[in-house]
Image (cartoon, rainbow, N blue to C red; front, side, top):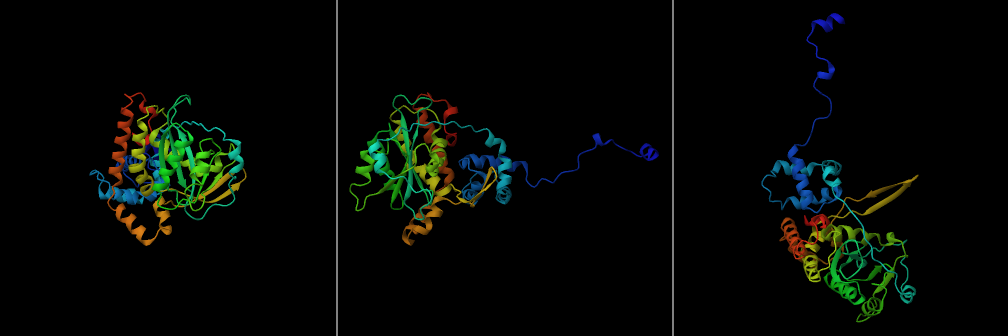
Length: 353
């Protein structure tokens, strides 16, 4: 062995080139294009992004993204997409705010607590909540966003209001109801004074209707009772408006202009959402099984008539999601520019930059 080592051209192992490991299947250009698409598509979760990529890539006009690169991106699994985006996803930050006050006892006893053991199987059962754009303080007047989402399809509508009084919240719900592509059958709210009041319970839910609209509430201090809308408060409001304070009253009109046009089209037609299929507890851990994901419009298809479905699909063929995203970002930047840059870019929504 000593003679063999002495006579042959031997290189120590520490100086040898590393030959192990698995061959790379994707080029470096894939990572750049994938991160660009991830930001343009609204920072989707990898599994949702995997579902949405075939629809979005048809409208991608970046010339550097060749057909070979597109095929590589489409062939990637959701877990591989998550690994390629791990560094970019880790750079995002998140904070929290709340502004709920307990409602009047008269309406607490009048509105029943929802049955959490039964989920609706038909469209029209919507959860409603308010999001405060207060920055770090709830004092004074500032903008709020009233958020409504359908439990079955995930169809979501948003409406901005100035101060969270009963009349403003009632009008916001009426505007959102008029934009829904289905009939509203019941609303589920928390125990805040913005919902449990005369304007919402008696004037809105009961007046000018053949049958009173059903209103249910969750248990006090149990945010998970409103799990569907609590999730949308982040993905549909915080991601675009951020956590900064919006205390310029005309900004409400700019927010509604965005909520009613570009934002609702993006979220309801091009943003897939995942739903829980099964949840299993193993000791102290909970294992969740999710579906592949689908957009709210795709989940709404079985509930639409053939005429309505043909009308929606004809409108969808004329929409380019990348151009809508560009218009949405320019509107948000213009709105924050009216403050004379009083809100730092760090507090802007991540969907706006």
